[in-house]
Length: 386
Ligand code: SOE
Image 1 (cartoon, rainbow, N blue to C red):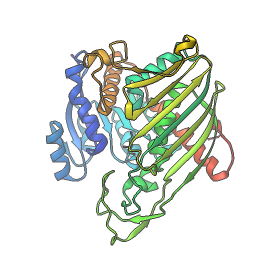
Image 2: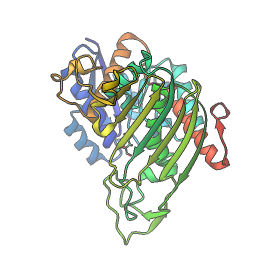
Image 3: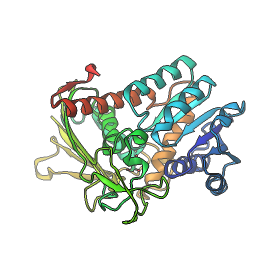
């Protein structure tokens, strides 16, 4: 049994999701290479010490550079806010550590390309955190498309809707600041849709988009808090420098057309990450809020039973599900991260790149950038222009 020693940067939302994945892995996927939770890093000592204890890390540090000095750390897992990704990734690659980095890979396309180059030059393994690929129902969609069950793909239609900043008093957290987050709903939510489009349908050739920032100023937060932060009416205000919503249309290399909508202003939608795909022989529908289900429609079903039907992707026939519970016993959000880590550990065991990796991170960033340029210049932008 080979052991991979992990050093993690960041201990909030994603840090917790990844920590949980490392902890659960061995119990359900005992054949993988084993990750050992060595050190977790965060700037606030009291916070990271508590996280280390609560999540099950052997120890903690308050400066990520300490992780790179340790010869016994094999993998750096980056869950810090997006503006920290590049510096940590470049230094970690130089130190010969494998990388697992949350999305979006970087603040800009050139930065993401630099990260990919550094990883390739260092000869390390690199993975990017597009976790929704790992829902068994999404993997079933991929299988049906690859087997030709949908025929020629005509439409990819996707929307990721949330509402956590609907309240104008919600504070100006880091995700609303361009210099830290890179963009708003576009890079946070749209990035997932773009990756799913690449995964399921293929490369895009051109895009045209629009965006809006509905609330231009918000109260400054007391600290860089997360999705459930509370604002105060009396706090001084600062400018929101990212998009609240971004919509775009695309063309794919295989002739399909796409539409994408990412917003944090869809009241009542907490995490509606959905897509519909229409092909010459059928259609598929997925909604993350019912993540164990895939709606399928096949044109060759008998005339008298034509219609969408619900497949519960919880049987041993579905990806990763033979490791979980008996059929019909559903899984959740956290399992997408566990499956990501299964892939990462298998890739390390087999000495290959995990998928999705920094190449996919850069491809996503190309589309993000092309959409932003299209919005700025009010025109269609080809992906190979960026
Ligand atoms: C917040 O909008 C968020 O947690 C994203 O950052 C994640 O990437 C997405 O999966 C869920 O929503």
